[in-house]
Image 1 (cartoon, helix red, strand yellow):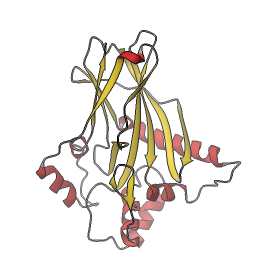
Image 2: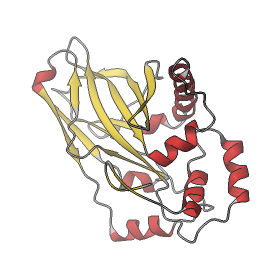
Image 3: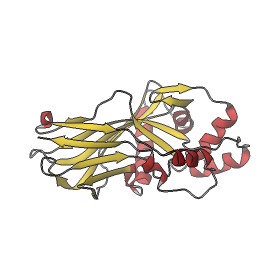
Length: 236
């Protein structure tokens, strides 16, 4: 399936299904993916992105009302779900354990890439800590993962302009908030805060570049930000 809008999917042919599997191998199961890519004949269409994640986010505040973390829920697309779970034991007694182990591997690898999360204060990038709180499950046939990305230093959103974005820098994976979703807040004084989701506005040049990207090309680590949503946090 390919997402034609957040939360909506259309069928894809088998050869493109094989190709998309090659594009998402950086998460895990890399040796299997590489072998699979050698065995299949990739289709002519090679445009980015190759996988899709529906996002739900929440800003976590401490007792002083300072931002201390960004909580995220990732809903992976149906194709990636099948690919990622095809050799897992998902019976009633072992499903939770298997999916938790899968999420742990996923997050260990995402740590190197800052969990695809960028937090800024007054335009300056903020350091992030290591994820320790996470869980995973299957929801309506899709792989779901919830995790909390902590900030190294809390930020007072009443005194500073705070924003964040969640994106794959290479745009192999497209990450967008669920349609009509809102950014939530939890913690002290969360009722005095709101988050505005600003949609991306890629140029025609960037769109054409993404469409033309070959899967074997050197990844462009600046492309994903062009297609990323920005969330601006305002607190009173």
